[in-house]
Image (cartoon, rainbow, N blue to C red; front, side, top):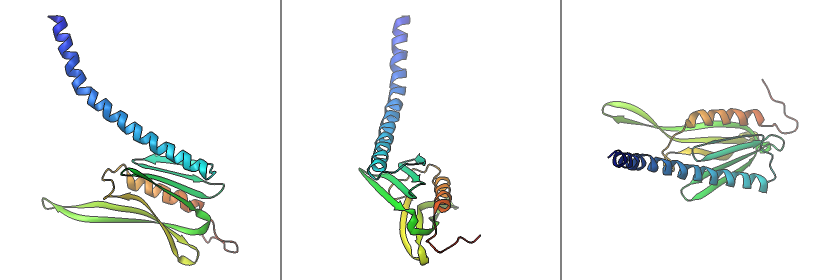
Length: 168
């Protein structure tokens, strides 16, 4: 009788934990795919990534010697890759978009988008980098924290054109 109970316990425990293990393994497989694509793009563009971070479905890294930013994002079944030459820009702005909804008479702000807006020399907006879009991925993994960190990191790396000096 003890062996019967042991077998039943093992089966029940397996039925509970195996699905969780499968989900974890699938998630790790996706992360590895994004990481491989990021490394492949860095190699293709001959970048020496000095600082890199991954969260959710995003990989971002900066090559401080060549002043280039590489961003890779998984969108549905395809990859979005963006290589930004930071020497072409003088400023980066963090642009967020929220929507206010009322749920049971309680107002909530829902984060819809986070963009890094790259402003070129002479205040021309040349490039937008979408770090988060609610329509593409509703999971949030400290998106604002990561966006603020990288906006500051990129801002610190931006260079001014020849003949200009940065004012305090």
